[in-house]
Image 1 (cartoon, rainbow, N blue to C red):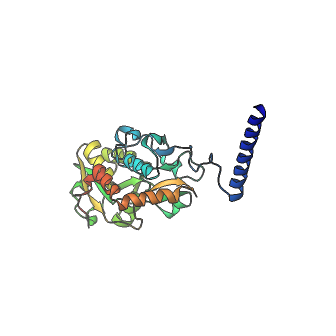
Image 2: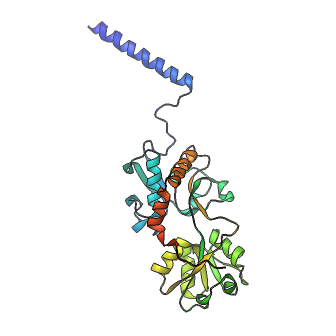
Image 3: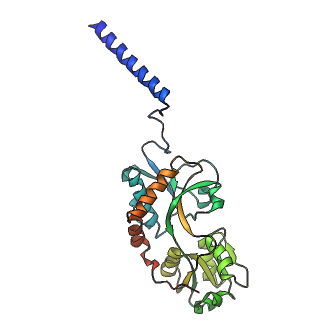
Length: 276
């Protein structure tokens, strides 16, 4: 009996060795290796905090909010259950800086640009947004109804953003565009009267004028400037997941899922006048 067990174990071991050698010979990757940060998990990053309407109540794991919903839809396309989605936090700047990442993907309204492509990968676009001009009641800019009407005012935006570029290229004000570190800083300057108006993307414009600003006024949308404001999911530079994530986004666009998510969370897009 013992000799039979020995022979059986030896045979099994030989089979495993042969199988392993065959795998090495064929170039197949060991099953333990994974292109994901954590095996069996889909690690998604967002901001700290993450804001409405992109994440509701700063709880991305709820699936509520535009980018939270997009992340779970992409995860589903990649074969992950909702319970396998792991959320982490990152700053906007660190996400698009060169170097290794602790996330598989990152969604924070990143505009796709050639300059950023030097440091990170982008998925295909999951949303395209116009820029918008907002102010508050009592500001002289509140009466503006055209781009020409805005040219004489002090107008600000977060530096390094498409919003800032849009001021310079579309509005071309007589005074230089006012740069701020963030949309929050620009909003404070508007409230304090340091600037007459600010430029942000349209979903943010609706949120600021409807929720955060007292007497907020959405003056209107602006034509697209030289940089198309297409948002993409950020991945580590040369990530092996980039093509797969882009394919998932493309599928969601083609089957209408992205539009459904957009309508649910950014449905207020319609109605803002386009300034000429």
